[in-house]
Image (cartoon, rainbow, N blue to C red):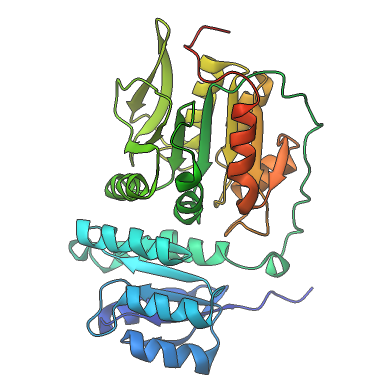
Length: 359
């Protein structure tokens, strides 16, 4: 069997040092090759037409045509070309990255801190950026056979839904930006979300979704009571889970070890809603790399709850939803466009949010 072709990457960054380090790291990986570099957004548009890359890494902050303007221009001519934003871990960089994800960026990676040294920077790029580039390979380019999706045996919607729990990673911010604003203002149950992101990013994501939505969206805090018409996003670097106090469901946070290399982890949240709400949970697994959420989805199903996953065609990366589908845990596998109508239908199928314990 012949080896898979290397992924052709175009690096766009105004810093010569960054371009050189990225080029060295990507060239040293047998699965990637650098087909060119560009020092500005304007030059990037020309290079894309000339070189036909498979993936573009795009600096967020550049003089002239910055990363956001360049991304908007790329999306007009190449709507499906994977673009990974490369940004600083600052409030300005994070805000621009959230904006880029809303404009259609495929994913993002944070730039290494200069004080960490060259060796540390190379390692961070290898772990974070290279891994994300490899995850964007088409399924046909993978050496292992593709997973076969399957749905669990159909079940009656005889039980009401008292909470919706959502897990996502790569491509998740864009998916959430499509979904959450579609929730009606009177959505009768709380929604809890784990999106794999650093702390500052989850705060800004919550704020942006809140501006776009009819329901209230906020970053989760310890001790908050779950309320209908509210969406709670797990803060970066904290596991978020649900506990029960009297007849109330309460948010809690901890910094216990990562699960599936993630903190927050979807599995932690899903296990907790299964434990507190039993059969009255609707779990939703959206686009994302890895398999976080699969064990938690099984816990939801074992407790009698329902699980829906995003389909492969509409996912940026079908790792997380694919793992649930392959295990036969999903009640339904749906494209992005029909997820919210189905969620609303299932929540509306029986009486709305009731206090925890009122089974």
